[in-house]
Image 1 (spheres, rainbow, N blue to C red):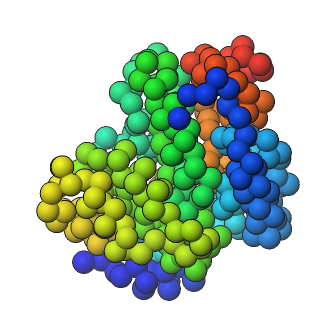
Image 2 (image 1 turned 30 degrees about the vertical axis):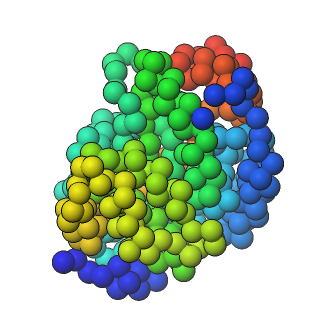
Length: 295
């Protein structure tokens, strides 16, 4: 059994005719801007709060919004000690099916990946309330578009809120590890929705290990009825290294917050994200070319 999470922490110090803004999301993003300014006094100023989904530069959840000083330095949180490291752990185990190519590296495919189509990436942190809203209300529509063959859709985890919310005791990392266990066992998509639906209502409280296991036992009951494999995987922190490696990519990419939407490595502009759904779909299918902006 690997080091207990508390010891680890101690060492670490859906399809409407158009996409419309939710008032609570806008208000939440306003809170996110204030949070980013408190957490990173040296980071670049945040851009607008008009989008439903994140663009790489501007869409930030209530806990989104930028990087802390560890992010700015490009370091990653090591799975074994919680200490910063400067490069990914090439020996770290990733869940079955996780992408190993450069575009979408360490991401979890949400549809059958096809050659010759754009890759759309969604960056998420399990402690980000706007990410929970997106997964429940927006992601199913994008999955339909992807399943129609328009593009490859990939979910990519980051754990940067562990640094902004240290009181959560590495909740983002522990949740990502648990998601990895579910992905490895074949019910990652179910777990993704289920865990976000159970996200703590109080900011920074984080998930307990018992909650992470309970969600897994419910989401994977048809594939891992006894839950022994999942429970052991969570307890062993089997995918902490994968979580750290993915977070390292997030930080090195300079992405300011979550949820963040990217197509073929380029941010989706707010004007596209907040516009009609048909335009967003056309933009993603075209790989961001010729729809409302130039590349």
